[in-house]
Length: 485
Ligand code: GLN
Image (cartoon, rainbow, N blue to C red; front, side, top):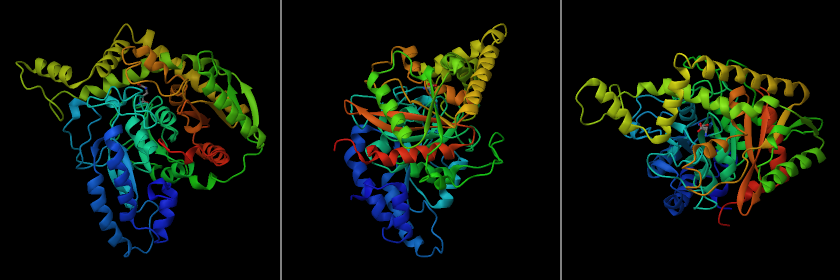
């Protein structure tokens, strides 16, 4: 088998047994990158050439190591809203086009301690606002299964890179679905951890009460492997949790007999594509045959998730994005008279249309006189959504839903209709609102385009999600399929 087809875990084992050198691995992905990257445009900053050089150094270092870390010498891509010291971090925004962070995000520090190799910074919707990467200020990433379609978003670059096999794994961020939706569209695994599981230090803030960093990989085992590295309490992020960390890999290979899986009726509504629905229900039936118990449930307030998310996320964004004022860092307009004019021209020229829309929505919702009617009310709805999940988890161990109502849409199809674009996250946003973990795994194809199954778990129970996802993955062979083959 070609090296680039191997999973991160397989590569890790081969490096540890000294059967494969880091340079042989990176070289294989570099060749794949050279043949495909021009077609999919997954990287804002493509570092594959420096990754090759780095891997040769790693070949030498390895002989001096008594204990080889799991990710030593392995290539990984990182979404371009995660700070990398000395490496441009743009958020796919003109306002940060030339911004070079003077520090690493905590997740990057952790990857560096393992001896990982950065292959590049991946494209996203500007500041992670969007579902297609069409909001990137630079270019749109293409879906590796069909270049005329979007890879999803906002972590579209990361998902497309993993889906195309130009890198074995990537990091993304998920505020309302940005890891799971592109993972579903590109036929890969995407895990949004419980809020607080992974440090947000160095993740450029969009909506701080919803944002989480997580893995995008080919296999469930690889997601577990990355979770083992990136999770944990961080003194630099006061919202990170000091809950004990399990060995996430230990959940893969466990039996699923007796586990209760809930099917929330609100996630199988009219309007969802029939092949998507059938694929998801098929997956659920397979799990039932293996001894899981299926329970139909209702989560009545989750249907308000989109509306309340689009009050809360823009409100937090309007506040977080106030820092881009042309003074401290980032873009500044070239011509201005007064200070006031400098601020407004900088922001007008630096931000794209969707980011401006969010800032306006958020500022409005937070303004005096409207705060109670919008922001406060949305927060109350958020509590009800959380309670819906907690009630469900009294009856079941996890939930199964489609990740998205349909497969990847055509480039340009939804860009002029923000509401339609927002609706592609209808099944993912409630998970962020409740702060619980969710994973998307491939569960079928519709006309050659991947379909995603979403599993949602109790707070800090990523383990059960990995357990069931791994079990399902092994019964099927979706993860073995690559686009164009
Ligand atoms: N698509 C959603 C939005 O535009 C979610 C984005 C995300 O998770 N970062 O806000």
